Image 1 (spheres, one colour):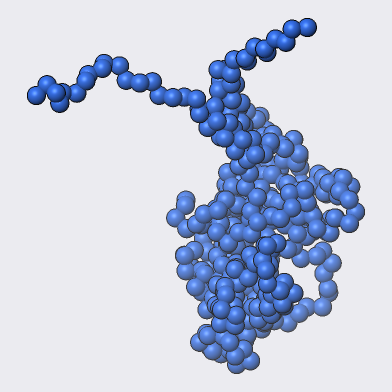
Image 2: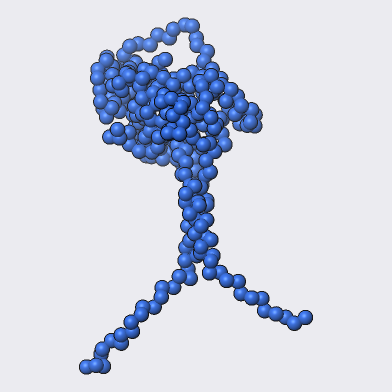
Length: 158
Length: 195
């Protein structure tokens, strides 16, 4: 019966890794394409709330971002109350008008009516601050706003 | 000169280089959120004359500093808000709205065109709750518009809007725009915020 005995060769053949670079390159290209370098370094906590009736912001270059939230762990010297961040630094409500004016000046004139203000506000901030921002925006006639949210159900996420 | 064969370049370390780049991009990637609830703020100039709106046409939503919800003077849970808003908007009390499916209650709104939702919040209200309420109210409008669009054109309102934005959509865009506008006229979004 030794005729049917399997030939036992101890070592397994090595796995061919010649296509590994190809796979890695594929992943690399995916991430290169998907990467958006952050424009602003956030100095605040920015945990956006959830909502499910969302619309997409259409043009990236026609959006002005206003951030608000509690100063993050490295900036506790600025207090624990929610604050506004414009571009790279903390700002007060008074600076919003100047910020909008600067943003408008940097855009082509015919695009100005299409500018949208995106409010990226931490979910634990209170509405007083946002009310103040909205009042400032009304003063400078920047009426199109967008409350940026994550996509998800609003119920049962406390 | 004698022709020499070019030496083969060793490509064994290519995978390492690619891995290094891959890890760099993996770490730096933040998939940005760029969607949210669009709103339009009211312009600053205010007319002096008071517009008289009948009480039954106003649906008051109050959010207090402890994130409690008071709708039409009664405490309400967030999950019931959407249904309550739909019922109010779709009431059609004066009978001029032939597509409304509401109860035609005389003490509630006359028609969707006159019905106004008034949202008031306090300074201490958290943003999270405010967004949740906004979301539910927008959802109520979207729900009604969807039903209306299904009844008129056999397509949901969201689909129609997606088609309108899609550059590859083969149909007639102007026609679609008119349909979308018609639904917006049938159920106008009248959401006012009290300061």
